[in-house]
Amino acid sequence: MGIVSKQSVSVQLIKELLFTKECSTTNFLAVNGLSYETLKRHTRKVNRQLLRYGLQIKLTKYTSTMSGSENAIRLFYHRLLM
Image (tube, rainbow, N blue to C red; front, top):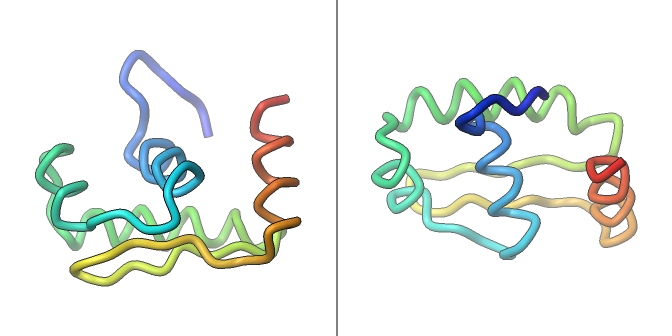
């Protein structure tokens, strides 16, 4: 995942979920000017990459959460920073 001048939708969502257990999907869509279908498409792509870490983003029309063990989340976060 490359970061350009404006962070990609995927990076923004992952960042938000790393710092909060759950985020409001409706607020995220409004702030980023996205449709729910676009966010679903990005989430599917990200989830394919997160499989290797044992993580998954669960998305509903109302909330978004990241599931996985605490250790898996810490490992992913550490590798993300490197």
